[in-house]
Length: 279
Ligand code: R5P
Image (cartoon, rainbow, N blue to C red; front, side, top):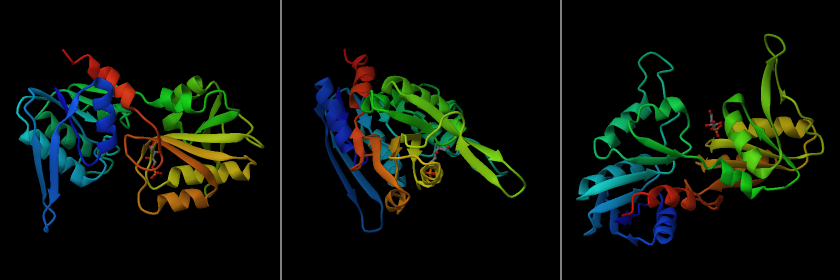
């Protein structure tokens, strides 16, 4: 077995290979002038683990080309499963994007691993998806710090609860309350945040809009130092400058999407799961 690295997850691929004591396959990736992608994988192994987050559309094409090029059994690790937020047709006629992605990838392999997929609805489109939870690792990063972990909405409560348990800290979530037809008040549900240090925890930071809205509210309520932590630091264009401008002091993400904010690695969590495959 070897680990096949991809342009979307080169550092994480290396870390997983090192941890499992496996070789990295030799990979050539190129882009033609018209934007088409070329892939070549040189490997004589009978089994492969491809590590490829799907953050950009090119990542998906690269993954498909790699799956096509490889002979033998492939296990696919998709640390960040993009397209998972479109897990239903919100409007008539919309594609259920994650269903299409699931069908496509599962036509090559039945064994897929991911980290904190956005929703259980999204996960339900896969026949055999193993989901790994990085929230304990986020919690450990802040262990015994005098902080409150805040979920920016009700959707992330479950995740924040796990992180807070591992950090051994209090947690709360922001609740939207409609005051009248034009006013919505967003406040922490239970805890006082004045003069407290806060870590806003979410699964994904993309545009940063969710965190920015939460940070502004918490600042108004007198919160002291506000940090943002997430599993998947997607950081769409201009999001980082907007996050810092909104008063966020530090941004902490894992390496499911590799960036300078990848201060927590999920490599050991993934390696632990993959270790069962090594005979
Ligand atoms: C929403 O359901 C997710 O949990 C995140 O809160 C959301 O995807 C973050 O996106 P953005 O950074 O664009 O607000």
